[in-house]
Image (cartoon, rainbow, N blue to C red; front, side):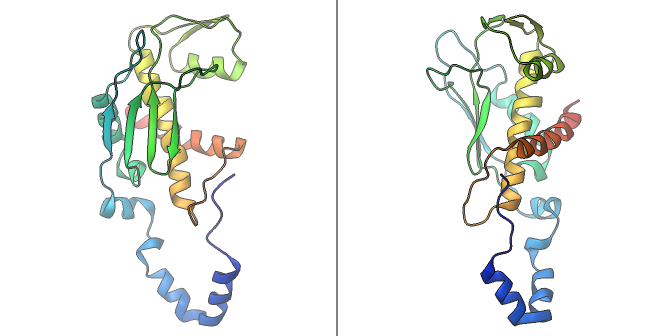
Length: 201
């Protein structure tokens, strides 16, 4: 579910009371500028830091890799992001976990086991297609990442996708309410991620 829109009964009432003068004032507000203009004026580069991975695991993309990707993604993508952290995956996770937008302006990327991954289960067709698009070799319950493909996956698919969620929430936030990840929200975040991937390629 996306963030609630900017209108509310109170704001609608104020619109009716203030009339044209109110609309002119809003039109001249910096909040109405396109995101790229606001980002160029106010975006601060996020803090990027890495914590030690759990034993037997690693961070496929380094903190420096993330910084370089953010530079290439551009100010309008990281505008409002406070930090990107490379951290150990939550213990006991039963599903593949790559990263998430944990709170407004804060992204986590999780450590991963070395390739190949013997999952012992069949991945859903959509998951297989996503991993193969990133360069993985998927057969049954095994996933193998040749050369630098897992590093690229973490940057081009995981980081870019979580930035997509950030952009949607940052642009539509109202009263600190967080958007739920519906299918439509996921699709819109992935559309943003696809545009960001082109900047890295």
